[in-house]
Image (cartoon, rainbow, N blue to C red; front, top):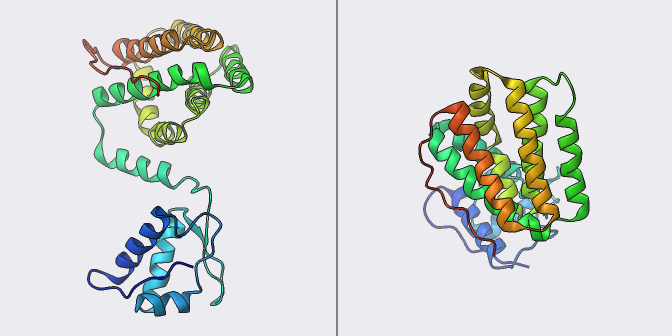
Length: 248
């Protein structure tokens, strides 16, 4: 079992967090492990139980541990941190008021890479899921709000099909910012039906490239898909310098 040292300066719960993070990083503590009870942790850290409790609450809010009531119950490290990263990124993006040009570049870099990688990594089940979402987008008299839900899910599922969890988490964390810009763009759209038809066809072309396992084509189509929407509907992007990442 990992042994901790008495804390020194800074706020007590912060140094407790530093030591716990180091134990996670070096493998001394792994998912599924149970931390010692609060009382024993307080003794090892040379801190009050209040400080230990505060540190555990931070980890619980981040989705890193599950804390069970009771003085003798230690917190358990979770294998799946849940939505913490996504939620934190959403707050960061909301507070920073990200520039639209930066958002376009971000999406091109992330999603063109995801498309390239999904071409070689996506399962047939994942590809079928993308096809089903496209079918939902084709429903007659579909409101923009519903269409956007299907569209956002399609892009997220494609990111997941790349088999890179960090890519999918990052895109999901940016979803609120993307939605805000998309809604603003559609508000001034003259012909939504024409744009919907075109966007859906572009999704189909990307999916065809994925089925052909052509990563270069899938990446190129995704880049054009994102760039052209923002250029025509959100603001006149004359040049987007972001270059698609290559799959590794």
